[in-house]
Amino acid sequence: MIRINNFIIPLFSLIIFCLLWELLVWYNNWPNYKMASPSDLWPAFWKFKHLFLIYGWETFWRTVVGLILSVLVGLSLGILMGFSKTIRIGLYPILVGFNAIPKATVVPVIALIFVGMHNMNTIIIVILISFFPICVSISIGLSTLEREYEDILLSLGANKFEIFYKIALPKTLPEFFGALKVSTTLAFIGTNLMEIIEPHGKGLGHLFDSGKISADYPLMFAVLITLAVMGIFLYYIVVYLENIFAGWAIRK
Image (cartoon, rainbow, N blue to C red; front, side, top):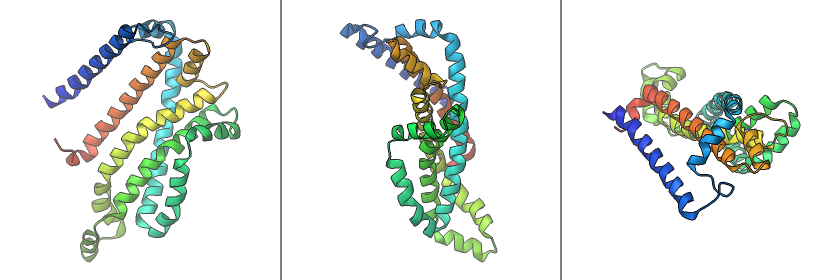
């Protein structure tokens, strides 16, 4: 019953959202060049169906690769900062300052440095946007580990690796998956920022930019909805993994 509700309730919410969206456009009598309605999107999907398949795949795989690498970077830095106070004090100001910089201003710099390397510069911007929540969550989880548990295990002959595996890792898993959910949505922002700015790029961001140039607003909204669907898909993959590895921490 719980699994059915987990499917039915989001689907019902989505239907209500689309109905309210359609009603808003109809009530204000907005033309589709001002605000596209859900009923305007299907013709755009069908007209550009091949581009949606090709560019959608380009966006998806680069986002996934960038997200995986951002997890590796975030975990590595988070573990170092969690176990070393010196590294934590030294890196935190740099990471916070870098994260405060609007990434839209970083995208042209990355595109210029790696000019012509469309895949690499897209993946790099995904990493730069997505790793920070993971890094902070792991760092906080490890640095706030109860000293009593560590002392008990040390007295029983456990080494540092066993303490990490049996105490620190389970403790940080809920925080890690919470941060990963945030990073999943941020990853798509990074991908599309690069695809929109890059002059000869591929992906849904490039398709969105084409719609903007040609004033094809249904196409632009269709791209946004496609990005939302892909983001939801990745989000629920993370939820599935969370239920497997950290299901014990979820309140039913």
